[in-house]
Image (cartoon, rainbow, N blue to C red; front, side, top):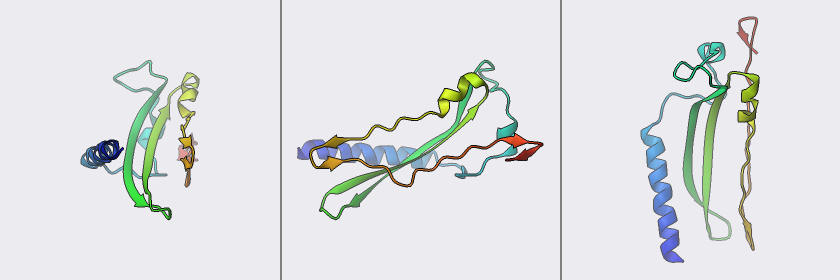
Length: 121
């Protein structure tokens, strides 16, 4: 059991460092006019949607029960280019539920941006 905990811990650290190394100037809840005006994605002009940003961080916190909690924070930006791409806006978040150990979600937020009359609405 201790060996598997160590592997999970080291994997989470590696993932965290990988995301940190690729940090950019992405702002949650802010979208550029260029992103809103985009009608096609040049490398794949037939694409129905494109992932513009997908970044996550993993942190560890001690719980009130003396266990270690893994906290994942993820930010995804998807540009829907056609009606066929609407399904890209659907997300399923699998949760772990076994005995006394249960996952939960908190602080979930979603934004939708549209360009109306040349303005973000």
